[in-house]
Image (cartoon, rainbow, N blue to C red; front, side):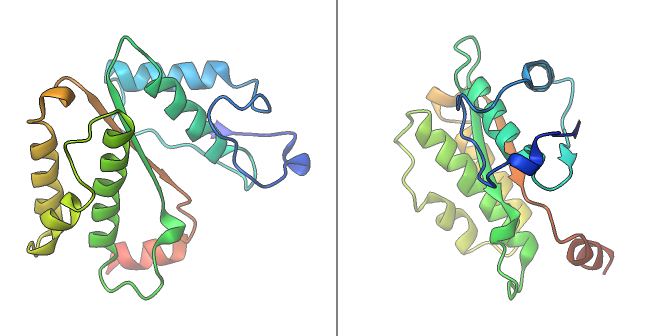
Length: 171
């Protein structure tokens, strides 16, 4: 979905949280994306656009709509790739662990308190394969009664350093 915000020159530069009255006019986009996620029609959805076009605010609105939908159990997690340390020796591991942490935060927000905050570290600590660690974590959360039948959605924000990612992925 491409975002074009004709008001971006007036934007204050801060993303708007879900339900903020300053965010309006994107209901069709929000509902289409929400429905695509719930229907399983799309496994990956990219939202792109110019700087300050409202992409992060749009993510927050979509998360809010998904999390407040009483007819579906949706667990959302969001993290920001700008947080990736420049000197990170294993960025793939950092990203996969961030996905697990974001899921854990969404699970706790959903009201499931049986998972403590150190569980992600426990899955990743002794594992040399970060993909296996994330897979084991996801298998574990799928065994929790309160989460059975839930949709898990990860929002990754601020994929900005394209040169870095192109270099890393191609090597």
